[in-house]
Image 1 (cartoon, rainbow, N blue to C red):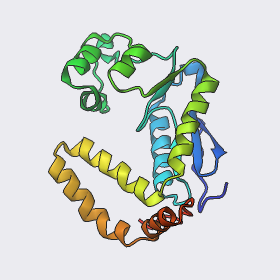
Image 2 (tube, one colour):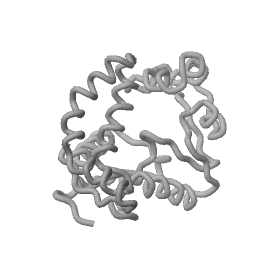
Image 3 (cartoon, one colour):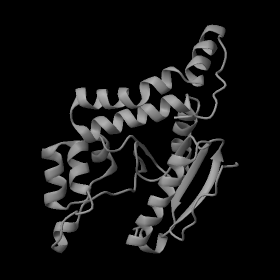
Amino acid sequence: MSFSSSPPESPFYTLSYPEQGVLLATINRPGHMNSIPFQGHWDFEKLWTWFENEVLCKLLSSPGGDMGCCITKARFSLPEAKRGIYAAAGGLARLMRIVGLQIASEIAMTGRVISPEEGKAWQFVNRITKTHESLIEETLELAREISQLSPDALIVTKAGLREAWETGNVEVAVGNIRAQYDRKIYGGENLAEGLAAFREKRKPNWVKSQL
Protein backbone atom coordinates (compact mmCIF):
# COMPACT_ATOMS: atom_id res chain seq x y z
CA MET A 1 0.00 0.00 0.00
CA SER A 2 1.31 3.47 -0.88
CA PHE A 3 0.73 6.67 1.06
CA SER A 4 1.53 10.29 0.38
CA SER A 5 3.93 10.16 3.36
CA SER A 6 5.49 7.46 5.53
CA PRO A 7 3.85 6.66 8.90
CA PRO A 8 5.91 7.58 11.98
CA GLU A 9 7.86 4.69 13.49
CA SER A 10 7.91 3.73 17.17
CA PRO A 11 9.19 0.85 19.33
CA PHE A 12 5.79 0.81 21.04
CA TYR A 13 3.72 -0.39 18.09
CA THR A 14 3.96 -2.36 14.87
CA LEU A 15 2.11 -1.49 11.68
CA SER A 16 0.71 -3.74 8.97
CA TYR A 17 -1.64 -3.33 6.03
CA PRO A 18 -4.01 -6.33 5.90
CA GLU A 19 -6.54 -4.76 3.52
CA GLN A 20 -6.53 -2.02 0.91
CA GLY A 21 -7.14 1.24 2.75
CA VAL A 22 -6.75 -0.35 6.20
CA LEU A 23 -3.87 0.16 8.64
CA LEU A 24 -3.54 -2.23 11.59
CA ALA A 25 -1.65 -0.75 14.57
CA THR A 26 -0.63 -3.27 17.24
CA ILE A 27 0.76 -2.28 20.64
CA ASN A 28 4.13 -4.01 20.92
CA ARG A 29 4.91 -4.34 24.66
CA PRO A 30 4.04 -7.94 25.60
CA GLY A 31 6.51 -7.92 28.49
CA HIS A 32 4.64 -5.00 30.05
CA MET A 33 1.10 -6.30 29.47
CA ASN A 34 0.90 -3.80 26.58
CA SER A 35 0.90 -0.83 28.95
CA ILE A 36 2.02 2.39 27.27
CA PRO A 37 4.55 4.81 28.85
CA PHE A 38 4.41 8.58 28.34
CA GLN A 39 6.66 8.45 25.27
CA GLY A 40 4.38 5.81 23.80
CA HIS A 41 1.41 8.15 24.17
CA TRP A 42 3.25 10.85 22.24
CA ASP A 43 4.24 8.33 19.56
CA PHE A 44 0.64 7.23 19.13
CA GLU A 45 -0.44 10.88 18.98
CA LYS A 46 1.96 11.35 16.06
CA LEU A 47 0.54 8.25 14.39
CA TRP A 48 -3.08 9.45 14.78
CA THR A 49 -2.11 12.88 13.42
CA TRP A 50 -0.42 11.26 10.42
CA PHE A 51 -3.48 9.08 9.89
CA GLU A 52 -5.88 12.04 10.00
CA ASN A 53 -3.80 13.82 7.35
CA GLU A 54 -3.32 10.75 5.14
CA VAL A 55 -6.05 10.97 2.52
CA LEU A 56 -5.31 7.53 1.07
CA CYS A 57 -5.91 5.73 4.35
CA LYS A 58 -9.60 5.14 5.08
CA LEU A 59 -9.52 3.15 8.30
CA LEU A 60 -7.12 2.44 11.12
CA SER A 61 -7.68 -0.57 13.35
CA SER A 62 -6.15 -0.56 16.82
CA PRO A 63 -6.98 -1.61 20.38
CA GLY A 64 -9.42 1.05 21.54
CA GLY A 65 -11.20 3.76 19.57
CA ASP A 66 -14.64 4.32 18.09
CA MET A 67 -15.55 0.65 18.40
CA GLY A 68 -14.38 -1.87 20.99
CA CYS A 69 -13.59 -5.50 20.19
CA CYS A 70 -11.83 -7.88 22.59
CA ILE A 71 -11.22 -11.55 23.39
CA THR A 72 -12.86 -13.43 26.25
CA LYS A 73 -9.66 -13.19 28.32
CA ALA A 74 -9.58 -9.38 28.19
CA ARG A 75 -10.00 -7.45 31.42
CA PHE A 76 -10.72 -3.76 32.03
CA SER A 77 -10.27 -1.54 35.08
CA LEU A 78 -9.37 1.88 36.43
CA PRO A 79 -7.12 0.79 39.32
CA GLU A 80 -5.66 4.24 40.08
CA ALA A 81 -7.60 4.78 43.33
CA LYS A 82 -6.06 1.58 44.72
CA ARG A 83 -2.65 3.21 44.39
CA GLY A 84 -3.55 6.59 45.86
CA ILE A 85 -4.00 8.49 42.58
CA TYR A 86 -6.81 8.97 40.07
CA ALA A 87 -7.32 8.58 36.31
CA ALA A 88 -5.98 12.03 35.47
CA ALA A 89 -5.46 11.56 31.73
CA GLY A 90 -9.14 11.81 30.80
CA GLY A 91 -10.31 8.33 31.73
CA LEU A 92 -12.91 9.49 34.24
CA ALA A 93 -14.62 11.97 31.93
CA ARG A 94 -14.60 9.63 28.93
CA LEU A 95 -15.87 6.69 30.98
CA MET A 96 -18.72 8.79 32.36
CA ARG A 97 -19.70 9.87 28.84
CA ILE A 98 -19.75 6.27 27.61
CA VAL A 99 -21.47 4.39 30.44
CA GLY A 100 -23.16 7.07 32.56
CA LEU A 101 -22.58 8.29 36.09
CA GLN A 102 -23.71 5.22 38.05
CA ILE A 103 -21.72 2.60 36.13
CA ALA A 104 -18.69 4.89 35.84
CA SER A 105 -18.81 5.43 39.60
CA GLU A 106 -18.83 1.69 40.24
CA ILE A 107 -15.88 1.09 37.91
CA ALA A 108 -13.75 4.02 39.08
CA MET A 109 -14.59 4.03 42.80
CA THR A 110 -14.10 0.29 43.33
CA GLY A 111 -11.17 -0.21 40.95
CA ARG A 112 -12.43 -3.72 40.30
CA VAL A 113 -11.71 -5.73 37.17
CA ILE A 114 -14.45 -5.71 34.52
CA SER A 115 -15.10 -8.72 32.25
CA PRO A 116 -15.79 -8.45 28.50
CA GLU A 117 -19.39 -9.51 29.11
CA GLU A 118 -19.87 -6.65 31.56
CA GLY A 119 -18.16 -4.31 29.12
CA LYS A 120 -20.60 -5.28 26.38
CA ALA A 121 -23.59 -4.91 28.71
CA TRP A 122 -22.28 -1.47 29.69
CA GLN A 123 -21.74 -0.56 26.02
CA PHE A 124 -18.00 0.01 25.81
CA VAL A 125 -17.42 -3.35 24.09
CA ASN A 126 -18.99 -4.05 20.68
CA ARG A 127 -17.87 -7.60 19.97
CA ILE A 128 -16.22 -10.47 21.86
CA THR A 129 -14.23 -13.31 20.29
CA LYS A 130 -12.44 -16.34 21.73
CA THR A 131 -8.94 -15.95 20.28
CA HIS A 132 -6.55 -13.22 19.17
CA GLU A 133 -6.73 -14.52 15.61
CA SER A 134 -10.52 -14.39 15.53
CA LEU A 135 -10.38 -10.92 17.10
CA ILE A 136 -8.22 -9.64 14.25
CA GLU A 137 -10.53 -11.21 11.68
CA GLU A 138 -13.59 -9.72 13.39
CA THR A 139 -12.11 -6.23 13.41
CA LEU A 140 -10.96 -6.60 9.80
CA GLU A 141 -14.49 -7.60 8.81
CA LEU A 142 -15.70 -4.34 10.32
CA ALA A 143 -12.90 -2.56 8.47
CA ARG A 144 -13.97 -4.13 5.17
CA GLU A 145 -17.53 -2.92 5.64
CA ILE A 146 -16.46 0.59 6.61
CA SER A 147 -13.87 0.94 3.83
CA GLN A 148 -16.57 0.36 1.19
CA LEU A 149 -18.27 3.64 2.13
CA SER A 150 -17.65 7.15 0.87
CA PRO A 151 -14.47 8.59 2.45
CA ASP A 152 -16.18 11.99 2.64
CA ALA A 153 -19.23 10.53 4.39
CA LEU A 154 -17.02 8.62 6.82
CA ILE A 155 -15.05 11.73 7.78
CA VAL A 156 -18.20 13.75 8.44
CA THR A 157 -19.98 10.88 10.20
CA LYS A 158 -17.05 10.32 12.57
CA ALA A 159 -16.75 14.06 13.17
CA GLY A 160 -20.48 14.31 13.86
CA LEU A 161 -20.42 11.50 16.39
CA ARG A 162 -17.40 12.95 18.17
CA GLU A 163 -18.86 16.46 18.14
CA ALA A 164 -22.07 15.22 19.78
CA TRP A 165 -20.08 13.15 22.30
CA GLU A 166 -17.84 16.05 23.29
CA THR A 167 -20.33 18.91 23.04
CA GLY A 168 -23.22 17.32 24.93
CA ASN A 169 -25.76 19.55 23.14
CA VAL A 170 -27.55 18.09 20.13
CA GLU A 171 -28.45 21.38 18.44
CA VAL A 172 -24.98 22.84 18.90
CA ALA A 173 -23.30 19.65 17.66
CA VAL A 174 -25.50 19.46 14.55
CA GLY A 175 -24.98 23.15 13.83
CA ASN A 176 -21.20 22.89 14.16
CA ILE A 177 -20.94 19.93 11.79
CA ARG A 178 -23.29 21.42 9.20
CA ALA A 179 -21.44 24.73 9.25
CA GLN A 180 -18.10 22.99 8.78
CA TYR A 181 -18.97 20.31 6.22
CA ASP A 182 -22.31 20.79 4.43
CA ARG A 183 -21.08 22.94 1.55
CA LYS A 184 -18.03 20.74 1.02
CA ILE A 185 -19.81 17.37 1.09
CA TYR A 186 -22.85 18.42 -0.97
CA GLY A 187 -20.63 19.91 -3.64
CA GLY A 188 -18.14 17.05 -3.63
CA GLU A 189 -17.38 14.38 -6.22
CA ASN A 190 -18.16 11.50 -3.89
CA LEU A 191 -21.78 12.53 -3.34
CA ALA A 192 -22.29 12.76 -7.11
CA GLU A 193 -20.62 9.35 -7.53
CA GLY A 194 -22.73 7.77 -4.80
CA LEU A 195 -25.97 8.99 -6.36
CA ALA A 196 -24.84 7.91 -9.84
CA ALA A 197 -23.92 4.44 -8.57
CA PHE A 198 -27.34 4.13 -6.92
CA ARG A 199 -29.14 5.09 -10.13
CA GLU A 200 -26.99 2.78 -12.26
CA LYS A 201 -27.12 -0.10 -9.73
CA ARG A 202 -23.34 -0.48 -9.53
CA LYS A 203 -20.57 -0.26 -6.96
CA PRO A 204 -19.35 3.31 -6.35
CA ASN A 205 -15.86 4.31 -7.43
CA TRP A 206 -14.90 6.72 -4.69
CA VAL A 207 -12.19 9.35 -5.12
CA LYS A 208 -9.79 10.71 -2.51
CA SER A 209 -11.49 12.92 0.02
CA GLN A 210 -10.91 16.64 -0.38
CA LEU A 211 -12.46 17.56 2.97
